Length: 183
Length: 344
Image (cartoon, rainbow over all chains, first blue to last red):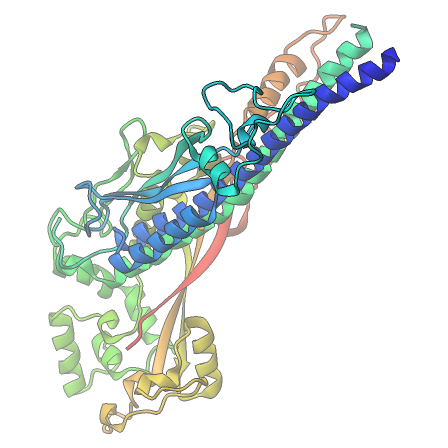
């Protein structure tokens, strides 16, 4: 009997620990995946800057489309923006050899689950307690499970949305000569 | 904790550290080598474009693209000169240094080049009788070059200077702190675990290939190299690759030369860049520390000092392709190539 209770408690402890480890590994994988995606993208932006000494409008539009795609298609990446700063601080055509800073910046969002009590309709974000869960002989006051959109909203609020900025940028010389620009 | 478990923990820790370092290094090499290769190629192609733009014709004097600022080392010294044309600063001096020497005459007189373009032959003096000689003189007086006639002639020395400057500026991210000495006291660009000896980069070969675009085999090869369909050079749109039809209006009947657009020249630029890998993890430093402090310096029980061995990690390739780089250990010359062409 004692062993049985021990086993139950072990299992009870193991389950959240395993969930925690899996989410941790999942986040490492997601971070690496998004980082390498951004790294490749920043390299394309840098190469465009080297070849033109700035990001021409046509290329910028195409790159911005990809930024929007990254922001909208990924739960982990948001606010993806191109960095394009010449000597004047703006994305302007400049002469051969002048420095240009090019790259990409985005916010990486950590994926973390809602706690069980946060998945109910009557969840009180101030109490953080299981007060509404039906107990032995009690009545169910949880209000049932919240809708998917409501849970998504909760995941995006300030308490759950853990995100941080990542910037990958290069300072490179423009390697194209423009006959119409002076030194 | 038993002695066995202590050793297990020690060995396990070492294995984890070494394996982690190896994985990180492998990932770094995989990612950076692709990027590095592309950046070197980009430096070369932009150098060829810069040379072909003949910027010395507008940027004369001691400033501008023909006299850029030197790329400097972390200690402030000059690493690569920005004076692509040496001490020459005027248009005439630069023009004469490139097109007045034996290298140009040798190129223009070679069987592959001479006889294809009347304008180039007049310019170089290959065809000099009567009016052709006077036309050639007029070209030279006005600093006309083969590039202006759609034939890509490159000066190896100038191109190499531009290539080195581009390479060092690009890989150092315009940061002179990234250009520092290696263990042998040689300056190199430190780039994500790699050492690039940009000041020893070489343009090893310029290979000119002339294609007769009226010949189907040549037209197909030209298309495979440039993605330009010779058939379309007439203005006719065609989905299939075809030959160029010479335009009789472009021919000089008296000279015996055909349409100047019939022949197209592509220059193949072969280059070598000495590169070494030092890594981004401290693994190598740890092994070197152990080797220097344990294997060679600690006396044994009897007071003897173990054999020193070859502790320089000596894998130098003294006679690597292209002559090697004898003053630097662990450096290999990485060869590659690119093409440059002009569409007339």
